[in-house]
Length: 236
Ligand code: CA
Image: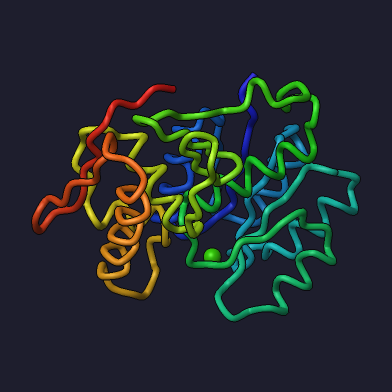
């Protein structure tokens, strides 16, 4: 059964982005934009996970979290903290958050955190020992392990930085489709990331070098002025 996730976030763009991408991953998502509403809903319904913003109208994230825990709820919570606000992290963890993610963040990173927290609390859902059910995506001679952030070629790991891995994963999930720099920016770096699209280009170019050094059956084409496209046969 699909895991149910409650998103408590008052920023409409971010809330929509989270709802959409979590939905694409197969989660059932409910979103509210008010702290009090989030708390009521979380107490009424057994969600598998809550993504909780800190700065919220009504009750703030800390109040929601502490009341949840005080009323006996053990639902895992990932808090969304503001940039340069380390005290929010410390306080959030003290109130019983299971993990945190600092804004701006890429959807890819968030999805990885969500999967990790769910694996921790529902180890029975994890693949049987030996990892034979482990998710793997094959492109040409590459094997990509989304949950481990690893790429292998003939059993050898190719060292990719996390952002390079996330760019590759997004592209292989859309083979033959032109992906814009904006899309990559939003998914990998976060929609309010301050930094140019040059960041995307630098990562793609380094990714390309690492991959093309090793094999020719996968290729990342540049689409001038728009973005990138992965050429290759993807098997899941
Ligand atoms: Ca907020």
